[in-house]
Image (tube, rainbow, N blue to C red; front, side):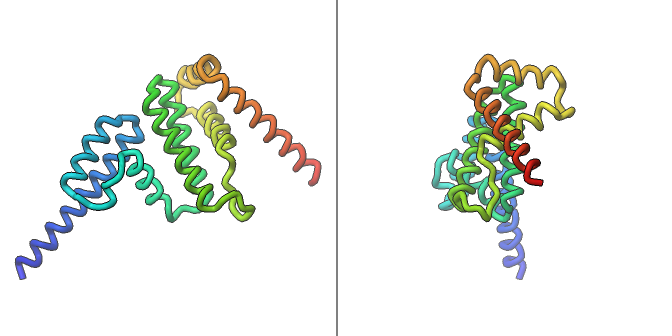
Length: 187
């Protein structure tokens, strides 16, 4: 009986360790620390030669996020995408461009996943990515969790370095304003 208990305990420790490594890979990946994420992922692949680890780091991170979000509804998915974008904007404002790009890319991949899953059917309400970007920027700029200097740094960088994003945000704002005005006229 003792052998069976030890074996069960070892499996339990092994599962816990594997899950910890999987989470660590995603945390480092989302922080833009690809080198560290890759080291942990390589360790994970060596220790646990399972099919789920026979994909690239990027694919693993995408799969992991989707796995975590599979039980989410569209509203929760939208919130997660906006959260990733807010984080990306903060990192971009701090000039951590690699981490910002990783978060932005992950947000886009999540959006793509949900759009592919549900299409643009009327029964779901997944806003276009540009609208989610607009909301994320608004939340970042209006959040007192970030110093004013950091919020201003983001605006300055967008104006100087990403004029196409600024143009998209202004167009989205105008479109949303028109939608609000149309809705108000029908009420």
